[in-house]
View 1 (cartoon, one colour):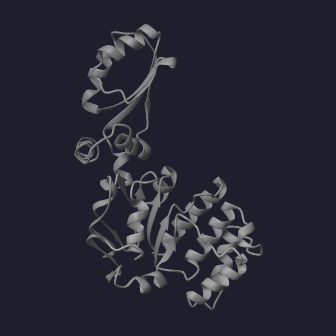
View 2 (cartoon, one colour):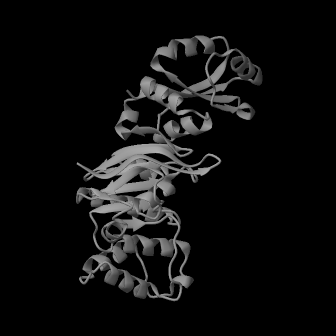
View 3 (spheres, one colour):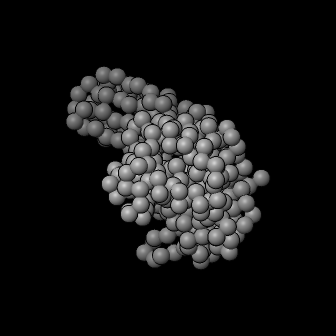
Amino acid sequence: MSIIEVKHVTKDYGYGRGIFDVSFEVKKGEVFGFLGPNGAGKTTTIRHLMGFIKAQVGELYINGKDCWKSAANIKREVGYLPGELAFPKKLTGDQFIEFMAEERQVTDMSWTEKLKEIFELDTSEKIKEMSLGTKRKLAVVTAFIHDPKVLILDEPTSGLDPVMQERFIQFILNEKERGKTILLSSHIFSEVDATCDRIAIIKEGVLVSTINPSQLQRNTNKAFKVEFASTKDYQTFIGDTEFFIPIERPEQNQVKLNITDEKMQQLFTELSKVKVNFISEIKFTLEDYFMDFYDRKKTVADGEENLKYGLH
């Protein structure tokens, strides 16, 4: 059963900005990662889901409700954490939580107190005097204050220190165990990799890939780092190789390259013609897969080709 549905949504702001024919769904009890750099279209998609923006083309639903027509209901029911925080600065953290509890019709504050304890949140000071990290923790607590079944989180750990980032990851895993449906937008690979059942990569407003992280573990692509014995050997290999070299480090006489199992023999044949200090295999990660799209300026078709050889 799909709880969140995005169907062929387009919002064209001109000059290549916006989102274009974006489609995905998030199933009940699933943590779905939305991965991309700033400006890729993550927040624009989320604002459509929350009913802040009306799509030019396409439809969006949460729990079967049209996100534009039922925006008021969705805002009450969904736990939403925006990427850009805006608080009434005159209030203290306690006053803001009280305000949000009234908005969410929360009378039992025991869950809120537990959230404050988990994230070590002091709500006594005025919001305008809070650090960015404390404001982010306040936003996290208020997003979860009504214990919603559906959560939409936009860059949730931005501004949190590493300890709190890890605590947030564990919290999300616990919420997943409780059956929550979560859309998590982020550019932090470790956060997405640790929590998400499926991951969509968005580039320039277009979804270029949707994968299951376990697919990466079965990937037949190999990444190798090679260090050559001399500058001459390095330059000879660079000049003669038939492989694409995504990373060159001439000052260290090193290269990094990605190949499939079928090309292993060819690589070692080429390396036999020069002297190397070492060759080491690098585990293929979500970050490698992601950067393959962005560093090489891949098209959607290129990404599908990579999936064909590596992940399908």
